[in-house]
Image 1 (tube, helix red, strand yellow):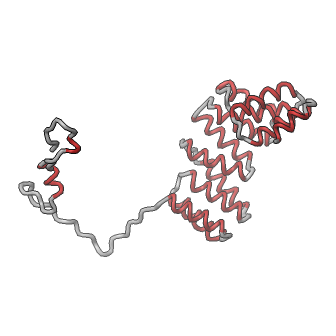
Image 2 (tube, helix red, strand yellow; image 1 turned 180 degrees about the vertical axis):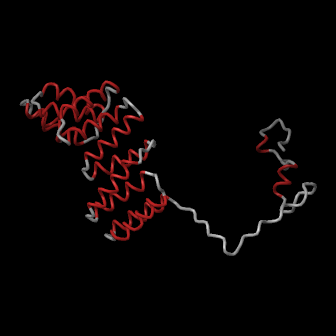
Image 3 (cartoon, helix red, strand yellow; image 1 turned 30 degrees about the vertical axis):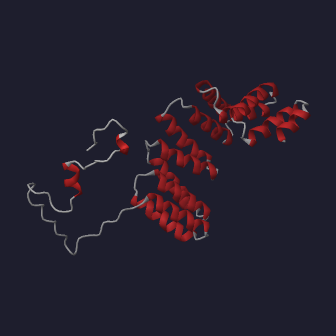
Length: 248
């Protein structure tokens, strides 16, 4: 109960608990509410209930992999994928572990299962995209990106990543088309600017490449690789001082 005062009430004396708060704080049963219900008995043979922490399981698998215990990591990842049937993230972890242990046939089967899920969770699909990119499984990554584009059509980051995946698979022109579409959706999309600039350099279109890469540096000035691309472009244009400045 707030005391009435002309001064700051936070500094005044006379604060008392309301009846409701006093009743809530009282360890004894509140009179007038009837007897509490009797506790439900639990049979001795009732199954135990376990709360699974996805975060803890994931960290355990990572730790086992870091220690080189790939067989144990594989067992944990396999169990996690079984317990979380229909989820992409456990399968992504299983793919990573199977790749590290060089179980390539099992890895490819896990990738197939992951692609067949048809997930509608963009966050989980992004986890899969990252894993497949790290492992350079570009064809599978492209299929994941197609699923993401279906869920969020025209998203600049998805288009930029899909463009890169197509280029990795040798479809340079199709990849460039996706990168251009990404820039139409977001002119400041750094990955699209950098990768399209690199593509233009490979086509000996250095003027166009330089404009794209300079814009990429403006958007992401702390991305070292973009400055390396720009340095190469400037050097090929005869601007050695500019190239050295970018490298420095």
